[in-house]
Each structure stands twice: as structure tokens, then as C-alpha cells.
Image (cartoon, rainbow, N blue to C red; front, side, top):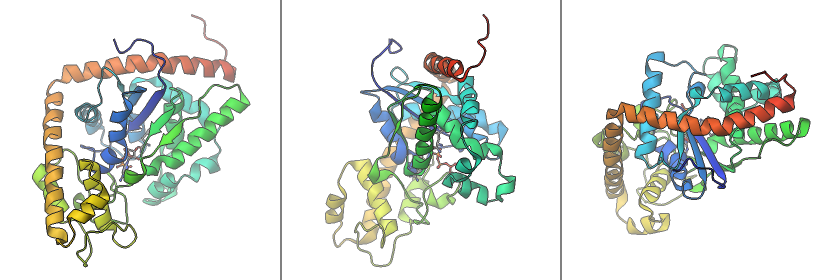
Length: 340
Ligand code: ATP
Ligand code: LTN
């Protein structure tokens, strides 16, 4: 069985269940790398439902979105036999370690995080939740509990990974070496997929307009139309130039990532052909990718008992590791040991 002890280095990552579907930014920026890490690492992948409530959320949708997230992970190739797939809220260890790390983090350090600044600017910092402020500290706990070597994420998470390393070092220094310093794994070419309508911004569940984001579970015909109407520029030359042609370059990045064809090859094959053909072909590539993905996700959602079993098994495997790390931490911090 895959739950047998293994000497492989670990990989860990998480994603929030903040929407009804993942999008191409999530997939190309992070999730695809999760899939390929399964071969040579012991993988832990979780749905960050505790993080999802740090901004306003609909409690009636959270559980369903957690299940849809798990189904999508499996549909894209995360194999429950090899990877522990679990819901963050099923392991109290995450919140427990977060509390301890809260006590090691300064207020100024948390407040400087770009994501906090961006997300709290919307309604004013004074009304942002403390959960949004301490979000990266919970993320550090998520990671450090498993002592992973790599954390595959998109570019927007780099700063949170740096804080995680700082906190690990601080704890190791103040108490005793306990945590491994994790390395972010950020694939440069797809680290930041852009909004199709506003290619100055990243594609995002919370920030993109409906036409700027391609959801993996969207109707494929709708996704095709979004590609065909993506913002480009007026010179009609297919060329990769992120500064001058961010819209076209973003489409080239997506095209190349989905087909394995290099950017140079694509640029050469659309030489002199204009944007119409280019967008129509990419639309087809996207449809061919999302159609089986959507069908598989639906099939998985039809077997609720099986999904529950996957999450239960994943949580058990995760707990074996997380509870051991947390016990070390409690001992090192100096808490009185509870008697059995
Ligand atoms: P939200 O807008 O609600 O913050 P999000 O769309 O940014 O959500 P997350 O759940 O925060 O999605 O991110 C999941 C993973 O996807 C992270 O590793 C993140 O770095 C990556 N990611 C998100 N958006 C992009 C993007 N546009 N390009 C590349 N990677 C991305
Ligand atoms: N903040 C991450 C989600 C996340 C995560 C983690 C990623 C929560 N905990 C631990 C990697 C490791 C995001 O993608 N927005």
C-alpha cells in the first residue's frame, strides 16, 4: 500500500476552495506541477478551507466547494493512492501550530505582506479580519508540519514562502532545530497567468471579471469564446513580448504549456497569419483539454462516498506526520505534557 513508510522527500501544497471551479492560472501556475511531483516525492496536497474563511464566504457553499476541489485534483491526475489529499479543517494540528507561530511573528511583519495589503485595501485595513492578517502564518504552519522539501505554487505565493522560512529559522534558533526549511517551487514560464481582459493583472478567482478568467469547469464553448475575445493589441503580429504585447504573450504561454510546443515554434507557425487563426486554434486546444477534465470531475462528484473516503484516508496519512511534528513543537516550547 502507498501509506507504507517511505524515505522519499516530501512535497506539499494547498489551494483554497474559494470558487466553484479552479482556473487556468491555478492549473498552469501550480496544480500541474503537483501532478508531476508525485513520482519522486511523498506528496501531501490539501484544500485550504480554513484560509477560505479569512475573507467573507458563503457557509452554504464551503463544503461543496471543498468536495469539488478534491474532485478536480483527482481529475487532473493527483492519485489518491500515491498522494495524501485532505481538507485542512480535518486536521486541528494546522490551527494549533499556527497559534504558536503567531507568537513568533511581529505585527509589522504580518502587515507588510503584499497579499494582505492588496486584499485589505478593498474595504480598508480597519475592517479586514485578523484572519486575513495572520493568513500567511497559518500557511507557514500548513507547510512546516510536514517538513517538505518543495512547495509548488505560483509567483504570488513567493513572499509567503519567505515568511515561512523565516519563521522556521526563528523557531529552530529559539528552541531547537525542528523544522526543515522548505523551498518554493515556482515554474518561471507559467508563474503568473494573466487576466484575459486585463493582461496587467493576474488571472484570479476573486479579482478577475467573468471574461478575464477561464474556469476549468466552465462550459467549453464559453471558454472558447473567452479565448477568441481575449484582449490583444492592434498590430496583429503573433510575437512574445511581455512588455509590449502582454495579451498575446499570455495566450502564447497558455498555448505552449497546454501543447508542449515551444513559444518559438508557435510564433514561427503563426508568422503572417494574424490573430484570428491563432486564437481559434488555441480555443480548440483549450476545449480539448477541459472537456474530458469536466466529465471526469462530474463522474467523481457522483460518487460522494468515494470522495469522502479519499479525504478520510488522506487526513489519516497527514495526521501521522503532522501530529508527530506538533508533539515535538509542544515539547520544545515547554508546555506541560498532558497525562494519558
Ligand atoms: P484568490 O483570487 O481567491 O486569492 P487565486 O485565484 O489566486 O484565489 P489561490 O487559491 O489563491 O487562487 O491559488 C492557488 C494556487 O494557484 C497558488 O499556488 C497560486 O500561486 C496559483 N495561482 C493563482 N493564480 C495564478 C495565476 N494567475 N498564475 C499562476 N499561478 C496562479
Ligand atoms: N495561500 C495559498 C494556499 C495555501 C498554501 C498553503 C499553498 C494555503 N496553505 C500551504 C502552499 C502551501 C494560495 O494559493 N493562495
